Image 1 (cartoon, rainbow, N blue to C red):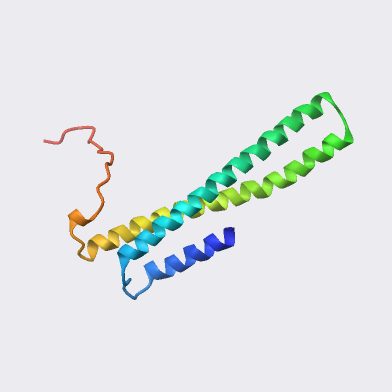
Image 2 (cartoon, rainbow, N blue to C red):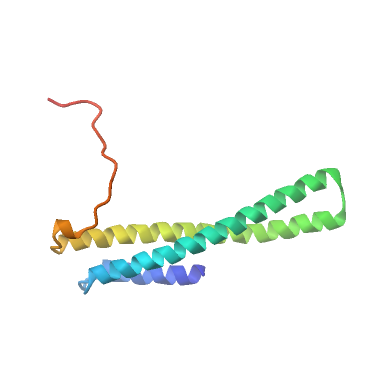
Length: 136
């Protein structure tokens, strides 16, 4: 999954940063939103699995404190060995989805520049940042 996400990010990056104009930015934005939704779901599932493995690992560590056994120690190290790749994979998914957000914002900016009327963009409530001091 991580390689698939990386390949998708590289292809988007080439398209957005390329010299050729993007044909249908709106269609690309819709496709990107769909992909973001899929990757968010994947990220959520892996977060839950990673969290479960972390809890199990910590529980086994507590069991080791009270019940010293080779079998429990082997189970602890097996869970630890599995936990590390899960954390790495979740890290890749998290950073990849954040990168897709940046690409979506870049496509929205390009769409505005290319002459889409302002009323054609979806309205989203944002945070209004007020200055600390009034300048007169």
